[in-house]
Every structure is written in C-alpha cells, then in structure tokens.
Length: 263
Image (cartoon, rainbow, N blue to C red):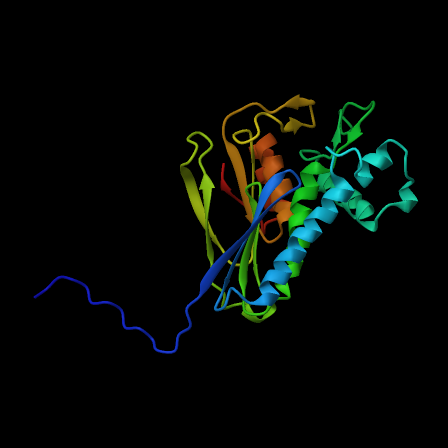
C-alpha cells in the first residue's frame, strides 16, 4: 500500500483568494498595505489604498517633528495659535495624557521629566501618533467589502476586514523578529482583527527613555504587545520595554485585552 497521501479534493466553485500589496514612504518610513480578496484588482480597493496613504500624509503634515512646516512645529514656535489648529491636535493631546495616566508614567509624550522631575518638558507625541495614524488610515479599508487587510508601519501593524467579512476572514500570520538575531524570528501570532506593536532598540538604537529617570533604556531585547487597537498596543509595548514587570502588572489590571507576545 502506498504511503503517499492523497491530495485533498478540490471544492468546485470555491473562489481563489488573491493578495495585493501597496507600498509608499510616509512619515519617514516605508508603509505597506496588504490586501486579500477574491479580486484584488478591483478599482475600489486601489482607491481605498490611495486614501490610506493620503490620510497618513495629512497626519504627517500635522504632526511631524522633523519638518519645520508641520502644524505641530509651527504651534510650538508660536507661528500659529492653538485655536487655529486641526482638531486632531487636541485628540492626540488627550490620548497622550490618558496614556501617561494609565501606565503610571511608564509612557509619556513629554521629554525632560514632566512626570517626576519638574522643570521644562518638551512635548513630542511621536510615540503615540504613529499607532493612531495607522488606525485612522485603516478606517479607509474597513468600509471596503470582501477584503481582509494588514497595514504595517515600521513593524507595527493593524489587521482588519471589510464589515461584511467579520467572522469569516482569513488570519494573518505575523512573525516577530528576534532582536538578538536580525532576520530570525522569536515567535509568531495569528491576527484577524487587531494590532501588533513592538518596542525596543534593535531597529533604531537606544531611543526609548525611562520617564521616571530621564535615562535612555539601553538593554537587549524588545517587547511585543498584541491587542485590539494599535494606539494602546504601542503604548503598552513602550511601557513594557521600559519596565516589563510593572507594565505587565498594570496591563493585567487595566488592559487585560492586551498581552505580551514576546519579551
């Protein structure tokens, strides 16, 4: 008797799911949008992808800390008044304050010791804007029927579907890079609806600051958090990289829908 397995029977009439990628450089980083659908060449998918990148460019116009002409930079130097700013400026400020409170100061958008040392503190919401921007842009894809998508920016990503695909879309297998061995993986997670965020020093060097001391966190490893929303997955990943034990404790109490996938 042959030990060769028989091929699985082909279900006639089962549509083949295709995959299409869109890539652009926005906010100083490559951002990729991957879409699964029976017909990935549909014009409405391409139009929604254009809207994704247009949204990200708009957010960069407002919040970039590296462009002297961004709205936030103009606000900081006094060239425009707060009352003349886009409403999103207020939304980000509120999120930053909430994130600082929820994490007991392990995450902050104020550099210079606002939490514990007083004195002058520079407002830099970069750490919260990226996740918020990707979530905002992902809204353009959630209204497209018959798709599943994965929107990735700098290693942080959102997976979602069109409303008609909730409960029946395929999962995305997300590899989590091993910071000690570039190009290898420390683990993987399957995500249908949700977000994955990683914080560490492997990609950008030692850039994460412990707000409690003002010192840069300079240690190996990284923290990857999985949860329903990229804003908070990113916040908790940063907090966990700063203090894994305390952030883990706070997550279990205050945000049990988020969990550390790799530390």
